Image 1 (cartoon, helix red, strand yellow):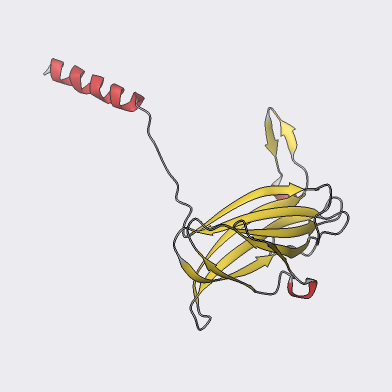
Image 2 (cartoon, one colour):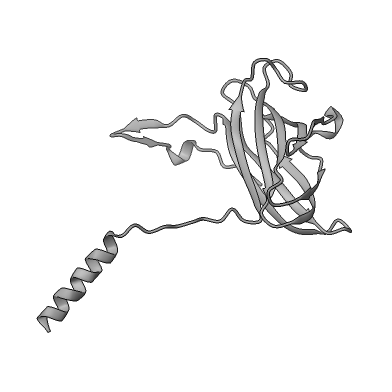
Length: 180
């Protein structure tokens, strides 16, 4: 009995020392970003002082029709500047149809065929917030089938933290909550 218990303990210790692999799926739409940059020279469509956010999306499953919906806090100026499918040419977006409150048709999304979206971002010093980019898959009649989102922080969000004993603290009474 004692040998069996020691053998079981040895097997358990050996199994717990083996590496474990984990994979978090992307969902039905894969989002990748190159982050905010102040490019030089400025690409066509960006105004002086604006930052470029390049977001690449790709269908993990075939999507017949995708629609872009993006939102930003009032303190953040955000507009879609250009769209490029794979290695194709860059299509500039007219300023009047690039505002966050408008829905933009992206066409089909297919596995292995990335779609690159360039956004112009700007905010005042000390401003910023959480920007949300959503892609909806829609049926031929425009009915939403599903939606997947990607969000990121631009600028400053709330008061700066205070470092104490190696940890950054944000007093709850100083953090403003956003109302959806």
